[in-house]
Length: 111
Image (cartoon, rainbow, N blue to C red; front, side, top):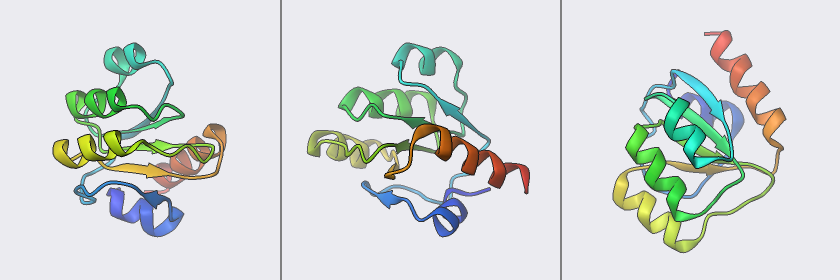
């Protein structure tokens, strides 16, 4: 599934300008940067509550398809600027992490 398809179905907020044609291989949920660095894979979509600039650095390093901020968390202007420079797609929703993970899982499994 492409990120653009996910956005059509789930209508998350878009905070940065990046490629929405990236494929989503799987999801990864964690609020620990070291965990994401050690265990996520290229093409994963990362679900987190963390919104600081280091999230963008990890997403770029791991070549993740996108980052979704849950619980109405909004990235700082500094994070958005970094994401635009690194071509990292930042998304957001008022939904909780558990619900977002379930939605993404169901969409990926139905493909």
